Amino acid sequence: MYLARRPLFPILGRIAAAIAVCWGFGTRQCVAAADSYVIELFTSQGCPYSPRADEWLAAVAHNPGVVAVSFPVDYWDFIGWKDTLASPAFTARQKAYAAANRSWRAYTPQVIVDGIAAAAGGHEDEIEQAISKAKGRSGAMSVPMRLVKSSGHYSIEIGDGDNGPASVILLTVARSATVKIRRGENAGRSVTYTNVARTMNKLGEWTGKSETFNLPDVPQDGRGFIVLMQEGTPEHPGAILAAAKSDGL
Image (cartoon, rainbow, N blue to C red; front, side, top):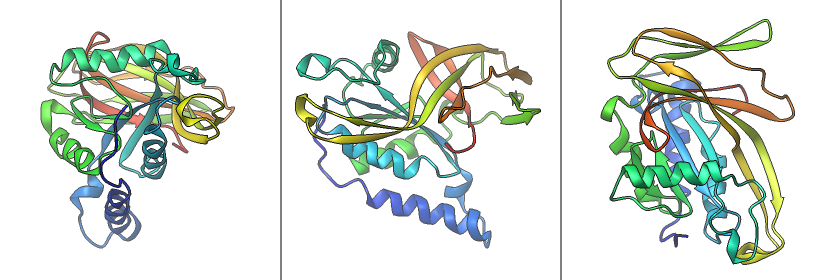
C-alpha cells in the first residue's frame, strides 16, 4: 500500500487538453498527442489507497495515445477481503518487474509505464516523471503496430524494428467492472475498475522483422483486448516496444 501525498487529478486536465488540441482540432503539431505509452496499474480491493488510483486510470484510459490496463493483485487478501478480480499471474507480473529492477518494490497502487519506469499510483509528480523517463528509452513504443479487423476477426500487424526479440502478449480485459467490497479496509465501498485484465497469454515471438499475428475471438460480454509487445521474459520483463487496443478501451 502507498499513501498518496498529492492530488492526482491535475494531470488529467493536462493530458486531455493536449490531446484535444491535436486530435480534436488539428490546428498545430502537438508532441504530447503524438506520443503514446502504456500504463499498467497494479491495484487491490484490499488497499485503501487504490480506489483513487483506479479513478485516475478510468479518466485517462480512453485517451487515444494511452493503452491502460488494471492488474488486480492478491497479496493483500489476508487482511480481511479476497480480491474478486485478482490473479496470481498478475501478482507474479508485478513482482517480476520488481525483481528485474532492483530499485523497485511491489506495492499498491503502483503504475508501470512502458515496462521501464515506475511510479506511486497515488502521486501525480511521480507518474509524470515516469512518463517522461520512459519516453524514447530502450526502444519503448518505437515499433509500428497496427490492429486490423477483417470479417469480424482481428489480427496484429507489426513492422520492422531495431530491437527484439520480444513476446507478443494478448490481454483480455473487462471494459468496466464494479465491485462492492464488504470487508477489509475498503468495506462498504463500491469501486469501479477500468480495462481490468482477465487473462494474459503469449501469442508468439517477434524477431525484429515485420510479422502478422492472428488473434483468437474475444468474448463480446463487455470485454475487449490489449496487445503488448515486450522484451525480456515473464520472470525478467523489459521495455514494451509496441501496444494496441480494441475499440472502446
